[in-house]
Image (tube, rainbow over all chains, first blue to last red; front, side):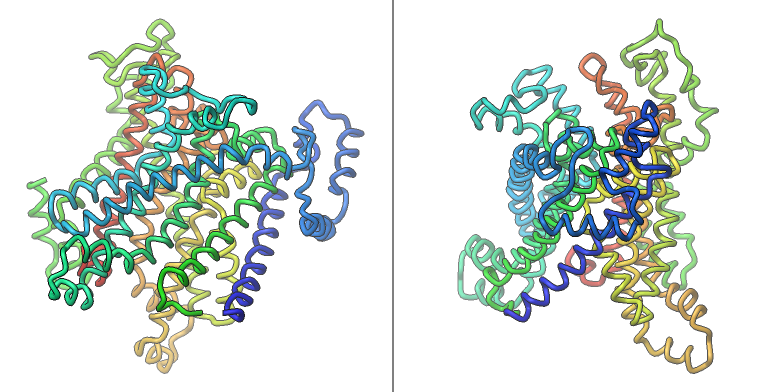
Length: 313
Length: 293
């Protein structure tokens, strides 16, 4: 177990180092002088030279990378050019709506995907199965921003059931702020339930064909107990993997959904940073989100241990 | 739909590809998806002849008209015909999707084959692939377009970079299996060159999973392009892609719901049809899924 964990952490460190190199290379891909691009056309040569010196852009690239990694090791993601504050602070300030949006969407996706997937597997080939499978395929084909826009027009603008956009002031109670997240979470959750539904169905079908299920049925066990107690527990492992993958998809989906609903989250921060060419923010956000994804993958592997006693590392 | 059944029946009776195609087109889902895709592609190609108006022609007096006989899908905030723009949009959106598929499949096949066939290259290539797959697709695409600059070519480059690792993973996994097969050993013993083994013998045997992946990437690329354009970091608004149309409609959606509705339906139809074909293809090719689905 300890050896497994050590090897996983070592692998993770290698992937994160490559991620850091990729992030560094991507932000240096921009044609021309990044300082001139960041400051815009009005900037004087002196301003550009000053910014280049401030951000170490006048140093050779390997040195710039080494300096950046050294700062990263100290938890310093750099300084936002536009917001005039540390990137870590900017990310932390925007984390709340993104965190809750992702969490609620995942909960909705699981609550739709798992029961529908079980039902589709139990009634395989029947109308229920076909309807849920069609829903899953449709879900994977709908752009979340478009669904958000249409539902916002319908439920927020026309019917007035939900707030149209925004997240409320930081001073208002949390429940008030979370009220703004209901519609975005439904949009993101419904669209992303497709993958979970399909995996639950496939996984349940695999397990329902196994010998121990036949034995349980032969013993006269009720069908609901067979499905929920014996099959579901075994079918959960691939579903957890997919739930983890969905979490990563949701972070991506949140970037676009936050823009539709005007939520001041990390996604909105990234999009604004791209439009303003605020490279330290883009770098920082890319790195933090990739690190989160790698950590989630590790957490999923460890969760296997708790769920399936057959899995040993 | 029924009229297409004889096409499947007239296909050559031998060979695994022919059997696969016959089984594939025997499925209603594939027929429906295929017909929608072909219709969209034809409409895109014939756009100048089948659209009633110039998609760029401004007619401010006719602005924000709801769908009616003269304008099937209504008009936008500048009085442009939405139907004509949606049909012309198919040109851009499908072309971007197709280009992304071609570039990412070529690059992914190359990387995957090298990783799967040359043990020394496996770890370095796959670690980079793992690292690239640690970013949500849309985030990596946004960052790449931000760095490269917003243009149609750069959107294609960015999305191709985003989807190359997916292809590389699938190709590597398949190549690992194929390289151990006897006929590869036999080809080597006969003195066949490594490049011929790789690009003729191995590639021929792993074409099916690549094809499945290509259909999904086509769908993802259409969705991602729309997302990028919607965020204002993709194709410049001057090009009427489905994504730029939805982005431009945001301000007017409360008064003219048809503005985001029709381009959105076009995206859903294109992505859904591609997934229907890709899904059926995967089911047919995967013996495990064939058993359970």
